[in-house]
Image (cartoon, rainbow, N blue to C red; front, side):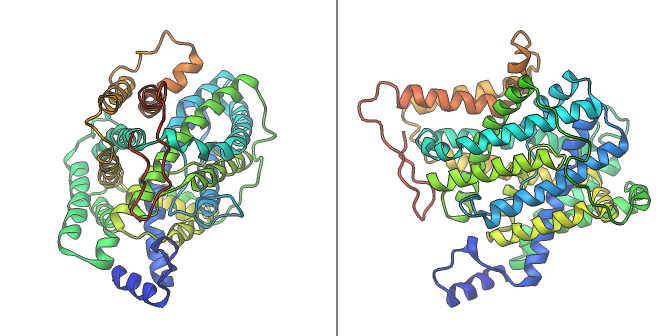
Length: 466
């Protein structure tokens, strides 16, 4: 059915790319809801971790969660629809990056935690967003430093580094709990995963496109039957609430906090750039230097608004990148619809509480598929690199090896300054830094005539393979 819609649109306007295709209203709503649930079911974890890390109350945590959803909706609209020369105009959903967790918690605790720490976090987020916005016009010109050997390594590590999180949720969320890996949790996860696999095997069109959504519905329904789903939070939540800017007070600006958050945002920009390439690969429209600059501008603006509206930096959300590939729905207007849903959901605490009641094992099973797809896209990107060249082979091998260090030995960098530990604690960050540095060493330094990255063509990224 989705394929029929595409053909019909193309027949009416042969020049319309699937990314720009305006789907019928019913499908926009349905596919947008699928993106919303994928986003919401996983994004709740980031503010929950931050709140626990800096000692926020339950009410403060609820405000932070609503703010994350609200600013994610704004950022999603900026990136999917575009605003002047801002926004990449791809099917992207913004919510937050796990890379920012360590720096955010460290900044908050350095200021005594609680609301005081939160205000310092917001000040750092606002300035870091301005820094990102300022460098964005130059960022796209650095595209030649991101050939497939670099972007493929980063995308692959993004997928593999967050797969353990999906495994943890599939078991129940808390590995120390006595119910972790219980028959009930495994049954819910298994039912969700089985539903997705079966739909991919036997269905086509609409059913196949919403396989993730139906998997979550089946897993949630089984959770209700097994008594795992708890709707008490939804019953206690209010119906409508709007949280304005600077809800907790005027932000505080601390120089060290700003430096740390700015470094984190620059690294997140690399992670987001990898997502831009991944989405470009999926939709068949590879990003050029201007697209990258517009995408980074969009994330910079969204980050500034995040600090104003009481949120963590709303950056490209990788789970929804996997959903674009899994559903094969490439229209950016679907994500724009999800952005509108996110704005509405942020003002409806009771509805948000119902969505949050999805059992963790169901969410975890869906994430295993989505994050696995991200890693697979990375492998696909790496296949375009010339691995007969020793430089490319070593770049991939060493970047993967270095990127596995934080997960294998979290205390490996404990002798480094605390600011560096915040950054080096992420395998994604380490992989990105090492891959970029080695690519420059092997393919740019001392080269008489370094190959310049070609502009992407209709088949996907066509960077010169270095």
